[in-house]
Length: 453
Image (cartoon, rainbow, N blue to C red; front, side, top):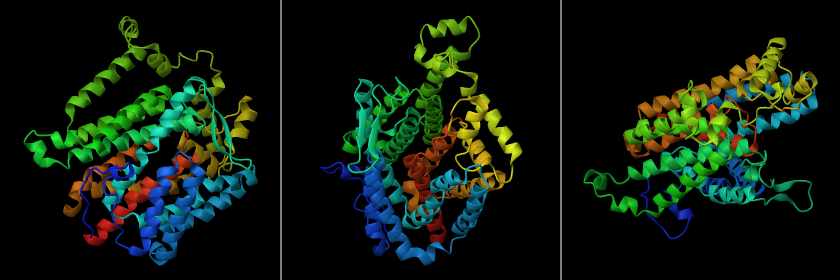
């Protein structure tokens, strides 16, 4: 097994990523790994360009490891699920739209199979986590400039597509959306980056046990990597507030609490808990405590949490109404669903309002694909998370220094799930790809741990 490389500050940004010079143990996959790192550095900011590198790495991995890939039972489960998704799509109310919706699933099964083979070392997890922090800086800067009134469409020359669509003052107005087109996808992206930055800071902290043990943290505090990560964490946290996404706020707070409890940073647990308690009390505490706290807590927070910021919202646009209608759809067609991308036209016919999804990922999947397909997907994801948790509790001794970064991936995916309980941003191309990347990364390390145990 290739040993983990040490963290050393170097003069350029990419070299701030721990393990950036790490060589893949399978030399024929080195080009695929390099392409993956480049791709995911570019992808969040310019998806079209980043996707080319990511697709190259997928193709290269399938080319050299196709026989190994097909041996894994989990990939067989995805292969068996694929024709079922095609069949239920044909039963949809709009088979053409449903077939287009399969693009959000079937290619990612192949992506998952390739990346669970390409990524089989915790050192790679550290590298990928570092890569994810790099595009966050320009994305946040563009979002801040956007809120000042700058924006517009940036078309791809000679095509009907766009590199970016940035709405002046955000979308919805007043909520930062940057290059993601809407505030909610940006919020989930920032939540994920924040968790990775926090995990990398903890990981870096653990690289200096001698200094920490004697109270001499000079080397740690002087690390350029640390200050880069702190800057990203602060910028993402501020921008997360500016997206005004309640789901992302909740996910970020829960993720931070879980991570800080794991690390034993109880002083930070106390600070986060106290702030969260005060804000929630300002929103929901009985009078007169509520009024007292509302004079202290900015209205931006408690009014957004209670939805008082939008008092004239039509009933059809509330989540409860959407969930009730989605449940009716599930009851009407429990086996096959109504087809991918069917919720929008059905809900418009029912309520006269267009909403593309019911603000709950499980309800969306069950109403679109039926209960069996939804349970199949959940079983596959659940198996990966269960095996990853078991591995975390019994981490190999030779990987012990990477245990925290592996835990960070679990927390990041947990935050992704929390967010999509009250929203659906999972099908946004960049977020969908990152979700499958996190799953594939954990699964690949599980595979590797089994082979060395």
